Structures are given as C-alpha cells and as structure tokens.
Image (cartoon, rainbow, N blue to C red; front, side):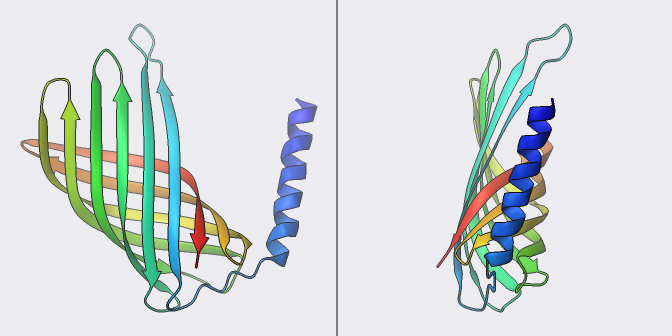
Length: 173
C-alpha cells in the first residue's frame, strides 16, 4: 500500500512539474483531435457479469479563444449473454474557462444521431446532452483530459440515458 501511495505521489509531482513548464494558450484557429476511452465491468450478485467498452474520437476548432465547435464519434459496446453496440455521431459546442492556464475547465452541449445494433435488432434515432471536463496541458500541443457526459438517446419507443466518465488525450495543431 505504501508503494502505491508513493507511486501516486511521485506521479502527481511529475505532472505538476511538467504542467508548470507547459504553455496551454489555446486560441482562435487552433485545432484539436481527442481520444477518450473507458472500460466498465459490472458484476451484480447472483447475475451474469457485463463488460462495457466506450471509445470516442473527437475533433474541433476554436472559433474564439474560449469557444470550440466540432464533432465526435462514440461507440459503446456491451458484452453479456448478448452483444449490443450504440454509436453516437454528435456535433458539439464547448466553452473553455481560462484558456491560457495549464488547467482548462470547460462545459458544453452536444446533439446528433444515435444508432443501435444488437443480436436482436437495429435502429436509429436522436441523441443530445451536456458535458463538463478539464484539459491539463502536458506541453503546448498535448493535454490529458477528464470528461463527464450525460447523453440521452431516443431510438424508436425507447429513451436511454448514459452517464459517462472518460479519460483521454488531445493533440493541438
């Protein structure tokens, strides 16, 4: 346990030192490409376990120093006694607070199309929701990101809400 705490402490120290050298300064005209992911293992007592894998690729451009517009493709795959895949193709708008700092928090909104495929059927509908997160700049062109999304999808007669926490990397050019 002490080794784990020491490793976490050293990693935090290294990130703080790297961050002080980083120059975030996102500005109008900058482009960003991001990769996010998460894996969730659910093992309910007395029931079959489920593995959920979420992968997202996003790209955007800063139309002002604070405002970014772009799009993303997110795939959620559920593996159980059946397989289901949900793909979201969304446009987004994000507002970045303190775009010149090493730690840049943001909020945003997204909307688009939802597509679901399972062993039983396939269909499509709409999706919309909000997001909030942060970008921690490791260098002028690279950040590590944390993001929370709440996305509601309406497909046929079903409305589903996804609450997602993700970690990712972004590259700026």
